[in-house]
Structures are given as C-alpha cells and as structure tokens.
Image (cartoon, rainbow, N blue to C red; front, side, top):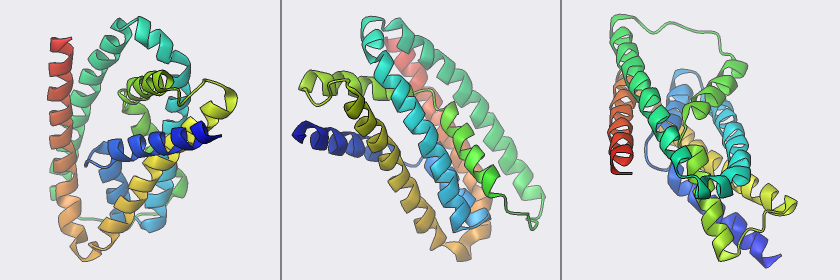
Length: 209
C-alpha cells in the first residue's frame, strides 16, 4: 500500500511540473476562460485531462517496448516537428485575424470546450514518451508493478496533476478579466511563439539523437 501512495504523489508531481510552464494546453485553458467563462475553462481542462489519462494508459503498456526500441521515440519526435510547425502557423494567422475583427458575442457550448481540450491534448505527441519514461523510472525504483491497481493510480495521478495546473490557470487569468481584450489580442501570438520554441527544441532533440 505504501508504494501506491509514493506512486500517486510521484506521478502527480511529475504531471504537475510538466504542465506548469506556459504552453499550448494551459494558455488555451486560460484563453477559453477569458473568452467564454470560468466554467468553460474548467470543462476544457477536463477534456485535456481525459486525453492525458488515455495517453498515460497507453504509455504504461508500451513503456518497455519504447525502452527496447528507441527509434519509436525518434519517430514521435519527427511527427511532433510537423505538428508544432503547423500550430505555429495556425496561431499566427489566428492572431492576425483577431486584430482585424471585433469580438462578437458567441453562444457558449460546453461540449465544444470539452472536445477542444481533447483535440489539443491529442496533438501533444510528446505526452506518451514522457509518461513512458516515467513508467520505466518508476518501475526501476519499485514504485510501480504494472498491476491493475498500480496502473489505475498512475493514470489518475497523471490526470489530476494536469487538471490541477489547468484549473489554476483558469482562475488566475480570470482575475485579469478587465484586461480581456488585450489578452485575446496577444494570446495567439504567445501560443505561436511557444510553438516555435517547442519546434526548435524538438528539432535539436532529433538531430542530437
């Protein structure tokens, strides 16, 4: 039972720290909260966390395979280059369009916020290698035994760790509601810039492998 507590807090902390730096998911959670409302930001975060838990589940079952076949990680990184480049262009174009159009009242759709969160989380191809690496380390440390209960704890901790950070982003940016227009103008530029940084980091990792 003690190893399950260690597994939970270790995985929760790893998921929390991986989500804290400003990035695609947490800035979109904040942006959704500002553009729509706090509830939609939380629902977006639930969508992200749902996919994170699915990806963590997949990572559990392929961690040993990835450990024995490092070329799989290389393939994922190469695909990530294409995704990050496409997202950088997308957010830059979206930012340009934002400046030319006035913000209109939109009908709030909680379902759309949830599926948007799921979609953007799915685009993050580095999540599975990340959690696969954690599995390998936790297994070497004796914190995970790849039994059913261990897997459930690992997956829940990954989802809760991610959701807790997104939740904080939603409520932090909600306090800046009087700066909504300024944030909406700049959010897509920030996201585009972050995609370029992630693109460069991924290219460097692929070249140095």
